[in-house]
Length: 103
Image (cartoon, rainbow, N blue to C red; front, side):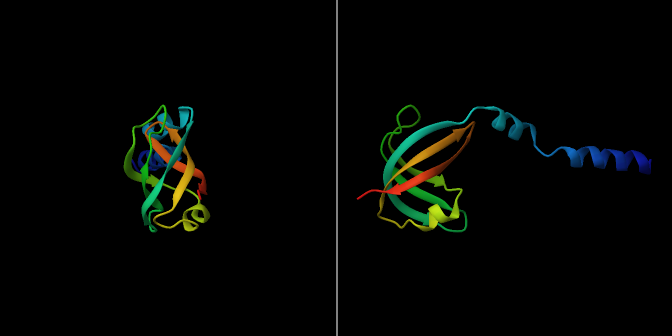
């Protein structure tokens, strides 16, 4: 019995992705352009709340949170700044990249 439990534990440990993660990563990533204004920033989660214009092909204009993967990109921003960025969408997951501050 102990060997069966150990074997099962090893099999489960070797499964690095959940079925949802596998489905997400197998979908091709799409890139959309975002233009908007930083409303607020949550440093612990690296999420920007942005009031954005329509993101053509993906979403109407609204205010919502966007995760930023790169800490350096997040830290260069502050509320009130107008930005342009790429939104990378893969399945239900999305984040911002290539963020630039507009004049």
